[in-house]
Length: 162
Image 1 (tube, one colour):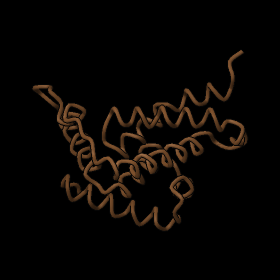
Image 2 (cartoon, helix red, strand yellow; image 1 turned 30 degrees about the vertical axis):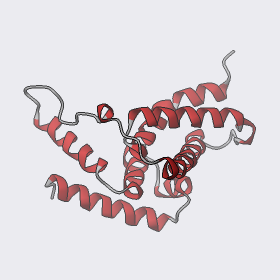
Image 3 (cartoon, one colour; image 1 turned 90 degrees about the vertical axis):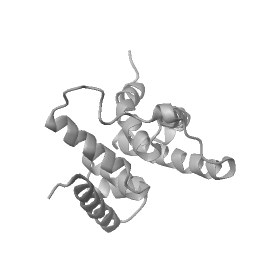
């Protein structure tokens, strides 16, 4: 019989990877963050409250892993592999208007400051409430609303959306 915790953890892997990518902008670092998150979740399994939603707990673990990783990077210096940068425009010779708009929005989101980008991902992509995102990031709900407002304005300005 499959373990409910493992099943729930496995189901949230795509969400964790999306959030990790939004934080670090690198596929291999995002994979590392997800792996660290899974390892920490398995070790700390007993601290998880089964009556709560597992994704909030996992997002918090991932965010803490990201903070740990960035602190270590300050000592090592930043690493960047140019081959990990996604081609947002696609290689299709006849891209549709929708595809171009999505690519432009994703590019604009990628250019946001980290604080705004993580709020956009949690609220707009992961569809969490402001309160849930505030809890995950450990900041007030008003700060979530402010960052999201500034992020939306920046995305609109960069993409020409009125």
